[in-house]
Length: 371
Image (tube, rainbow, N blue to C red; front, side, top):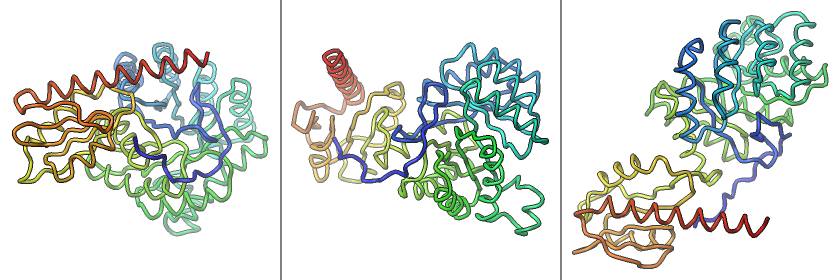
């Protein structure tokens, strides 16, 4: 029920990672990376399924060897979400996964050796409609650039990226996206801002090695938030030392806060205080856990008292306002019913799920009439 985002996004060339459009006017995609052993096909497929259930648009899988490439082929056959193969140095692995149906190659052209090797990878990508992701990282800059700049800098990151891009430009291959990641927020933000002015291709955003769940979420939110507010970024990964599913959740929460994506429930909740008429924190914890499966966009406000509750509820699809003796429920901004504290979470969950069903039915009806 909130207005669209005021952010004006940078215009970029659109590519496709499988069926997912990246860049142009496409929604900003959210991705993560598996941390299972790629040779363990069952474990990797299981993790990808959990990531897809959480809303992942794209998943990256490390492919460090030819044995892992064969395992990747088996994994690819068992999942639906587009897969990016993460490859370093060995161009033969890139050629093999291209045969096995990879949706995107994460490989730096300048790192795979002779020009004919670069040409072979680019030809395989072109022939199979596979885009390439150039990934520059402050922790693995070329030794020559380390000597030139003395230490990682935004300029060093951008120069590294442009060197790899030159390989693709010489072969007239334009279907690529680029990342210039650093663990330092200022360095990453400055590098992305510089690069955004130099190329038209999509940018993959990330603050690399950001930290654990809490600290990494904060650092990523600040760094990526600054770039997204600038309109920079076409796909994001929140790099956390945590369950990869958490990366997807945080990524969507970040985009929802900027009104750039709306998937799942957008909760508006007060921090609680002595005015609360029900357990706000307990209610929120329970609702977030129970409603993780919902992907339909919905604004739900959970406010403990009547000071701010009615105002927030009137702007939400469903709003809960604490009251005495009963709590008041608003639906579509209007008072609808009252709930006691005894079965508050159960009854509120039921109301939310009913609203989701109504919204989904209405969307199907619009599609059917349009067809």
